[in-house]
Image (cartoon, rainbow, N blue to C red; front, side, top):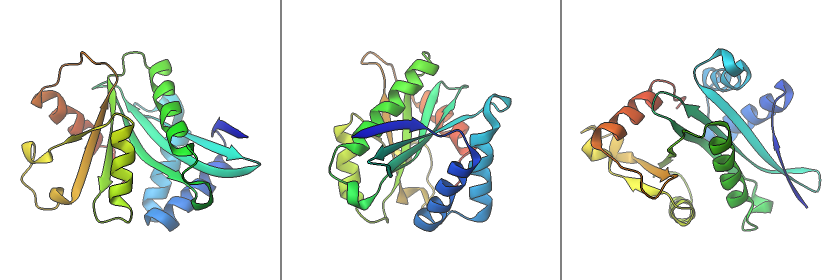
Length: 183
């Protein structure tokens, strides 16, 4: 039986931060920033959340995301499903719970952005997953001509079918996210 929980206590956050250090190679400063943002709550303009899936008493996966109020957009920081729980729908369950939480807490939220580094393992599998969930790729070449940026793949998941996009909107979203992103 799968249960979905939101993490609120420091010990659970520290365990997740350690996992992020080991798997995503977060530095000590990155982990401190992540835990600080998650514990800051409403004192900060950036609202961060962690939801985790529990299956038979074990953590099956988690998702870290935040909300950027200036552009009314979410950012998916990380979606992780532990190896022994893969291909069971847990990633999709976490993903849609994140969307539900963003829409419930922030009805003005227009969508969310996520980043996928191309050089990481299972890139094509992860890309297919996010495309199946409704995300669309962004061409960062429109925004920047930096060779390092060419290694980053951004996806955007709109929450409304009739949503209007503009180069200015996407540029503003990327600027706001870039001001707080940990990587």
